[in-house]
Length: 106
Image 1: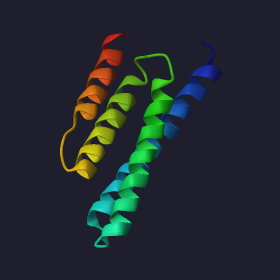
Image 2: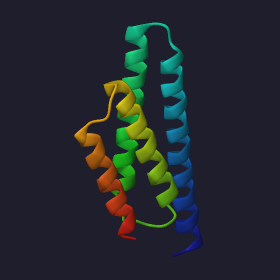
Image 3: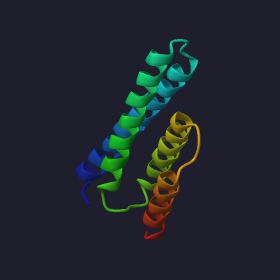
Image 4: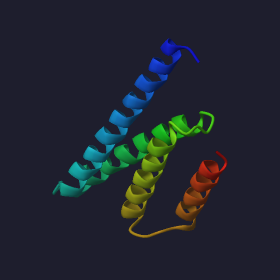
């Protein structure tokens, strides 16, 4: 892999990490919002953002440099989703299983 390809990959990881951090901050703002409808919309937007980010990461071949970020996004997605559902569903258990199976394939 060339030096330029490596730096592009690193910059993509950094952009995705920043997006994850921004979405987590948005979810935290939603938790602290007093307005129920506004809170739910902010949280739902953050959840959709995390879902999209996870889809992007899982669209890549499983690779060690991406692993910590992918696991972080999976955790953030599942925690927010469980919070919004006010419980833990079978779908969430399947999300965890799929994420872990992908990581073990490395």
